[in-house]
Image 1 (cartoon, rainbow, N blue to C red):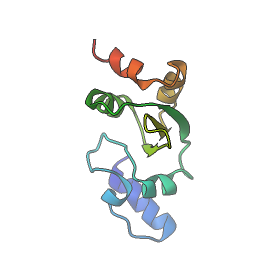
Image 2 (image 1 turned 60 degrees about the horizontal axis):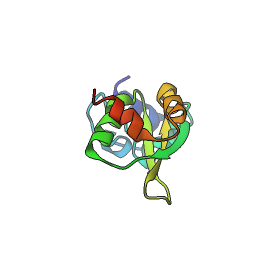
Image 3 (image 1 turned 135 degrees about the vertical axis):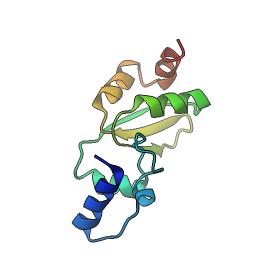
Image 4 (image 1 turned 45 degrees about the horizontal axis):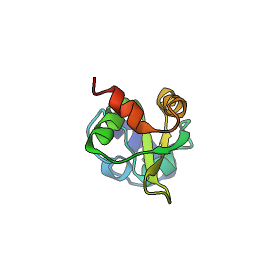
Length: 113
């Protein structure tokens, strides 16, 4: 589904006028990162799984996260500065993070080789 189609659906369903940049962080077709507004409106239509995990915000970790996630996702901060909360439609990634003990560094390092 194209991002504009998703935005049009939200606009029609909620009688609001959002643009793509109101719902998504950018207009790139393969990046499904949502803003809070997008997550708030789409979580009623999609099954988002939640996981909290250790994330150091190294450049490589961020690139690995964006490349690894397939589907829509929203990232929120936690009180602990080294952890983030991920809401994703990519259930396989959420399960993999749980298997790796909620340490994303192990998953990111696996992509280096």
